[in-house]
Image (cartoon, rainbow, N blue to C red; front, side, top):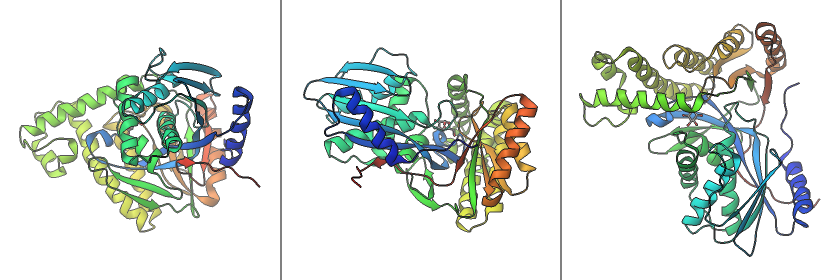
Length: 399
Ligand code: GLA
């Protein structure tokens, strides 16, 4: 069976009960969530000032929060069954990728900005799978930032929340990620994908045809161990390409500014690897714009073709795929009812995203799990996305 998300109101009610068992009562506790995401197209373009088209999932990170009258921050993760206690303005002494580093990083930054002025107690629960490339970390940092906003009652510019969360990943966690993940976790809308210009941060919500097609995520189970270092390596390669094109046009600031024509004229002199990295980014940006046109015109075949091309480019030019992801994409493309398939997220493991005719979705995922097991002797987990949610408070239901 595909792994299903639980109803948000049921999770919020269970969190309040757990909170009461933990702290004696749940008076004044507010529950907020922020969703994980899947990127439909536009991979490794965000940190090149380019275009992306992610959507939120139906799975989120939930935060149950209330203020304290002293300067203690009492944080508890249900997923890890761990508690960390801090003083206001202090960072935890946890390793960079530890959940408390993300949470403590956000709280420290917000304390510095004067948004966090008292202690708090915070219970955390996430249903976004970890290490699957579905951005559980952005869901976590955004959920904490939105929870604080909800508690203090002073709204913050949503784009500023996304920048803050990216800053926490850069500074405290050490991954030089782009703006896409926190931006869509904060600003994604139910029933829509989000078309984002990562330079201007202009965006548009694009309706998803969820009545006709399902988004099926197939998790290869390959964890992205090297993802951090390889990711930073790709960023450095893009910077090298930018330096090359700047010699021809000093106004170029990012690969976003290199047109396909300029690339063709001036690619000589670039080392082969750097040329391929740049080609991927330049063509992928154009593909996102094309894919958005197709989606808005209701052309799912055309949209799927863009997804397929994106995968080939990530595999051959940007080299961030792996045999398991390539196998899942190849098998999907041979299955009837599949509009398009590609790896999604940073790469080197994680999930494929498949756009599948709604009525064919069940046969499709059953077939994928079967074929994957025969080929790799391991189980693929399937996430069937038939609806998606947005960030915000979950109001208490008294019915
Ligand atoms: C990771 C990063 C994103 C983005 C993708 C690749 O998910 O967190 O910012 O760069 O990789 O598209």
